[in-house]
Length: 416
Image (tube, rainbow, N blue to C red; front, side, top):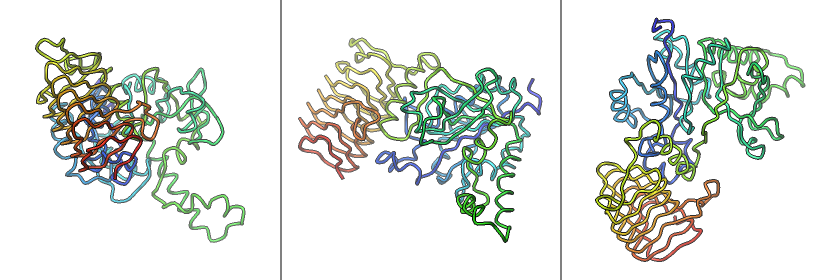
């Protein structure tokens, strides 16, 4: 064990500022991958999961953000985990597989035998060591993490059919219009270095097609969609997974644990709760406790940053994350919410199913609340940065952009 040929590297795709538009107004202040879930940046959860991979040599983040936006965090987490972590900035879109190929020389500099590929906006327990063991048993080029969902929800994802005995990927369809399977792609993969040959093969085919001077009308029609793509733009799902299905090269590993996509602020609140629940097993020291004597009454899973000040008469939880330098007043009640840095919640205020943005304040006897439907447009109330809710104001099922003052109650509104 530990020989050079058995080294493993991990690549985490973090996207860019143009990709996180559904995450506004929260992504106006901070890159989406650094938004805190359960008190830790979103990207921290897949990074810390990678640490559990045997013989991990290095972690790469690939995205369109400026490197300086990640520099401080990556320096800190790299020292904490004692693993080299590097940020690689794409100058132009290459596709989910093309981005991997573009940085192949850096990714392969440690001559790894296996490469993990993860998407940052996935919330999961990330069973990476188990995936690695299964992948080695299968003996294929790649293994995909999959999960079963309801037939009604499956069309939102990549659906796939796998052999029930061997777990071989037999068929893959990205967001099909008609139902294919309740088994979906979780956006977590492990590959051998052969993946680079497969990606290069797609680029080569595109170049060859482009060089053909004569095409029949049928051929021209068939290849129109792919001909319009740049030669080095390769999509993992349509260009790699679909063509290689049924060729004994790709396999699946089904997780029975939690999994969600983090596309919206509302889903980040749900996923924060899932990670808080996971802390019971992985990091119980991060969970707060209190019975109302010296500390606030804590119910369920709650994270409180050490610098936050919470009045002993407050009642907090379940599913609450309180960030640095927040101040929670006497008699306040917090349920299912994320309280960001430097927020002040004054006496007897109530926050339920909400995200309260940086430097915001909620006045005495005010309520910031929502229905808690994570899939509805305004099922979670969102306050952007530096929003002031004055005393005795009720904000329900609303989204408030930064630097607004609310001196009257609002319901089902977007305050621009």
